[in-house]
Every structure is written in structure tokens, then in C-alpha cells.
Image (cartoon, rainbow, N blue to C red; front, side, top):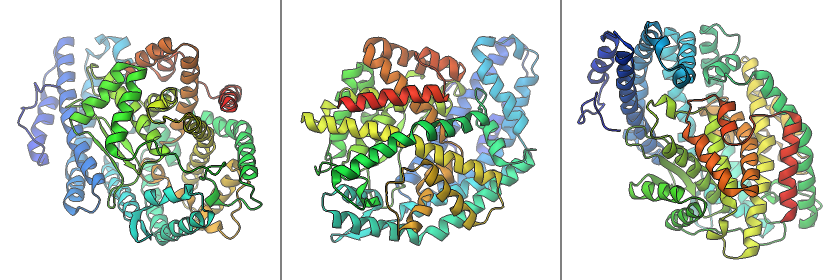
Length: 563
């Protein structure tokens, strides 16, 4: 994006330097539709500049959670810049909606954007600004706490992500030893994370009450812009997954137990290959991961490979796990320079390759909607964003020979991928249902939290894994889920998108060329259409009824059985 409103050499160092640009927009006269569209373009440019500045502060902080300077830089934005923007942004939204020319805008083009603006105005409360600031600062404590978690094994201090490699080791004693070390380390932060979560729940509940909602669940459903489905739809999804997916998972776990010839199937047995083969190693170094991803994407569509090349050249890839790096992985869109950033913690495992193609799907999405005029047009809801990434996991699977030269390894990789697809849905449903209970009962005791979680593990678990003597590990398992701490209620979207991704993959199996054309067309819409319209453009349904869930789960099972 070339700056036309904000000077090219302007950098956001303090609010008092940024404020005049917002003030100018607030005071500007709008006397025609052309004036309004010019005002929107300038506001959009300012938003892109601000967004990218915050993005880099966040990216740098997560790449090195040990740096006090980087943490202070991010907190400075959250404390001294963002709160001021929140208030004036609400005024600008009101100015837009109050303009007599707003109804003369192209309704088809701006419908989705304007309904979001209306909702934002409805939910805005001045008294919530300091609460949002405090909440954002607390949310980052999860990253610093988790990023500091390491164990010592084989004479090496390693991250828990790297240590998890040993859970795939063929030696059961090694698996158990490392599992116990990981759990012992997690237990050290159990109280810290419980206290943090309790504080976040209290803050979020205050925000909801201030906005006139009876609980944060109902508030968040609105603030996430869930215009196209209801809370009841989420609950129906929980029930459909429990009815149709849990039995499949149970059957699979029983088969694994039998193949491993174990009378006592324990949590450290869940990751090891059932046939006793060593862990899949699709790559050794970050360089290999990049190059093989590029080759894989090129086979699907040349444009997809070019996206990875561009990010690589612009140093928008930080892939390897290291001490002090925040856990997890993400793709961060950068709206001004228009080339996104991928962050992850790769240690050479199959799941790392899947993370890369997943985040690569997000990145391709960012490239495909690059020509849309407004940042808001380029900011689709998670139900669409995750469709891009999860579809890429399954589509790319058809071309994983760039990672696996051995045909048996390739089959194993595909089996693991389909296992993870089915495994993910009950976990997603459990995490989402957990949050419903958490925020409907904000005054609960920690003991009640654990009781509820354990009940959900019964509802959505297979019951095959023996946790006798390890109950404490299971009851705090929710603490590994970043979304609970940092992005509440942003999780069921993965479930909806996973169903959509299965349908996209099914189309790809039937007609690859047409499926990719539809996939690209859908992603190119950004958020200029409703979610059902975007899914329809992709050639699939936005549907999570029990019948549809069963239909897609059966398709995955059929494909799995062929392997």
C-alpha cells in the first residue's frame, strides 16, 4: 500500500504524534458520496499503518519473550495508544453512519462492512476501554509463562514443544519419562495460570455487564460479529460431534491399543506409531521446510508457491522452536506492506509440516484479498480464515511427496493427518462448551472449573486412555489451550471451518482444477460477502447439522480406510 494520507516517513512513536490524523478525519467535512469514499480510503490507510505497527510489536515480542524492551514496546501500544484510538474510532464510526451519503454507497459492496460498524457502535462503552487495556496486558502473561517452560533431558534444556518429540519414541520408558517431566513442569505453573484465568474471567464479565449483557458468552458472540449463526447452533455442533465423532475416535483408539498390544493404554502411548515405526521426519531444518512447502504449493497452483517465495525473500518466516519464544504458531497479516508473517515452533515433526501448510493457507488468503480497498474487507471472520488454512492442510496432502519420498511414509503421514482431523473436532467442541460454562458461571470456584472440565473429558473423550494416578494431568489439560487465555471463544470457528475444509477436499478429489478455482474465488472475496455466501463460492455448504457432520465424518473415515 502506498501512503497518500499519512506521510511516508511517519512512524508511530507516541499518541500525541498520531492523534492529529484521527482528529483531521473527525473534523473533515463530507459533502458528497465521493467525499465519503475518499474519507473512507484515508481512514483505511491510517488503520493499515496503525495495524502494522502493532503487528510488528506483537511479532517481535513473541519471537523473544525474554526481552523486556520488546515487551515494553507492545505494552506501550496497548496502554498508551490503543485506548485513545478506541474512543476516537467510535466517534469516526458514528460520523460514518450519521453521514447522509452513507445510504448512497454501493450497498452490495459495503453491506457486510456497515453491519459490522453498526454492531461496533452498539457495543462500545467508554468505561470498557481501561478494562480492555488491562485485559490485553494480562492475556500476554500466558505467552511469557508458557514460553519459559522447559525441561532438562539427555543433558539438554529444551522447550516443551521440542520435548514432545520423545512422546513418539518407540521406547515406552523414554515416552513415560518425558511425559512425566513435561507434566511436572506444567504443574509448576498450574496455580499461576488458574489465577490468571480467574482474573481474565472477572475482567471479561465486567465488560459484558457494562455493555448490558447477562454474561460474557453472549457479549462475545456479538462482538465477534457472528451474524450468520447463533449460540444454539454452537450447542447443536457440540451435540453432533459427541454423537457422530466420538464413536469414531473411540473405535480408532481401541484399534491403536490392540496394535500396540497394550493391556494398559496410557497418555504417553497416544503419539507413538502403532506399528512401532519411528516418528515421521518430513524435514530437518527450517530451510528444508520452506523449500519443500514451496515445491508442494507449486504443484497445487504456481501462485501458491510464489507466495512462500515472497515471504521468504522478505524475511517473513520465523519457524524454528527456541527457548524464550512464545508457544504456538500464527500467520499475521500486515496490511501496509501487504506481505504477511508466519510464526511457529518447528522441531522437524509431521505436525510442524502441517502447521506450515496451515499457516501457509492463511498467508495465501492474505495475498488473494490484497487488492480489496479496505482493511475491513481484508479481515474475514475466523470461520472463513480457518477455512483457507484447514482446506490447505487437506489439499496439500495430495502432494506431500515433496516431503516424503518413501511411499509408506507418505501413507502414514496421510493417515496421521486424517486422524488429527477427526481428533480435533471433539477437542474443539469440548473447549468451546467449557467456555460456555465458564462465562455463564463467572463466579465459579477453581474446583468447579476442574469438575466441569473432567465431565467434558468424559463426554468428548474415548475412555480408552487410562489416566489412573494421572488425574491431575488431565484436569489441567485445558491450560495448554492458548485461545482460552488470549482469544476467548475464538475456537469453535476451527470446527466449522474443519467441516468446510473436508468438503473442499472432497471437491478437490473429484475435480482438482475446479476446486482450486472455487477456493481462490472464495478467498478473494475477503469479507465482502456473508459467511454462507463465501462458503457457497467455495462450492460447499456452511452447515453443521448432525446429518452433515455425519456425512463428512463418514467421508474422512472412508478415505482413511483406503490408506
